[in-house]
Length: 293
Image (tube, rainbow, N blue to C red):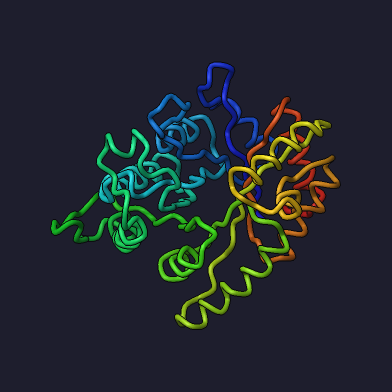
């Protein structure tokens, strides 16, 4: 089971690239970064550049997009960035992609990103990306493009909890990447994912779950996070309480094991609250208790 956590921010809000080395030393499978560019003052950094910096600071750890918003960027440009990062890192990229959750924000409008038909845009991008990354002549927007030097296509995980996202993952991805989902709900959706794969006569994708962990004794932080799920994401309170991974290493390992039993092959957790370093060490211990080599 692959265990990933998101790179933390320094006090000034800039991603702390030095922590990628620390995660590598702790035995994590990958260091991740989110793609959150809104344009109204919320701190946000270009995900490919963050992972390029992490690649230069590390040697073995995977570099995971969690997830890259495809409609924000021209498809050929995404392919060039991923191809470059594959070369710079020695093939360590894990490419999580999605349709994006903030259409209509200032950054979306400033770059001319589509606010409608984001699913169709993403489908077309996913059809073209593998050929572009492999250096094959590929048609994009009526133009044949060949990028070089060619490189291996990284594992592609399609984000989103909807039926459409699951179908997109089956058609075009190596994996499906739901987020903010409990182990029980994951088990139900994993069964549906297998049904979709059968309907489309395609392999069943791997499953990589995205979530949040609060691995310190901070009940107020847990309550605040659950309240956000209820009020912002309109999630039932009982279901929301099952989302955050909390407690000590043994308790976190139990939660991770529940995800594994539900069908997850990987879990990526953002560490919320105080003392990121201590939490990263606790999650690494949980990974060891889980038996992940």
